[in-house]
Figure (cartoon, rainbow, N blue to C red):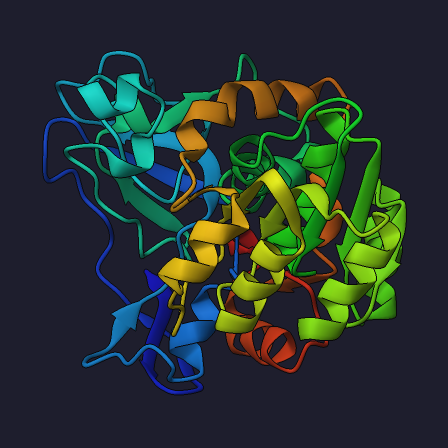
Length: 341
């Protein structure tokens, strides 16, 4: 089998990898119908997160179950499944509280940009559809595996409610799907902070009512202007930088809610500033597994089409071009087709 391996900054290769095998009785092996490149993959691709050795890549996936371990009870060969980027037993006290991405037995997936994948804790990690879906649903079902689940968590953690005013900081796939999620949760006004016309257009398709191009202090001032000097009810931080976090906190009204789902890099908080901001702050790795059944149903019922964030589709063996396109912002998100490789 050939799969994606990062050897160093901007050195992505599609090369021979061992075929996945059942190593624990709770494992499953799936053949991927689609996989993709995540914005968070770019941190290591750009060398911001260093890799000390060749590292398999990919954590978003959906496909057909080929084989299961002897202790797997709910997942069967032949089923179409979607899984989270974080494995979970879905039974521990943390999982029962809805935070499966912090499961006591969690592992982070990292080898999904390949034709096949071993999924640990298959019963707790994977969600099966009733039938094998038709091909037009695959991009949107793949999106539920991470970027939609993360955008949905961003809206949920920021207490988005019907009639609320919401600001989304970040116009990557997660930010755009946070807009979609806020719309689904009934937000009346959704401000997308974006400087890119193609992303602004998609944000409006997903439900954004306003676009703000300014960043930093100017961005905060613009949000205050739009909200009559008060700030937004909910602000969803979907980037992970110091500037984006400060922009989020300062754009929120006292008593409002800030969620943060962008993987943080160089972010630090001023305790006194946070104390007087009087905002609720909640985030972290999205517990995608909590939301998967609901999100899969919304997709299959035709209520949402999150797969629109994939604006570049390539055969898996052209994965290096997919990384380049996202790195250079020529693509929002790249879908990879294993069966074309």
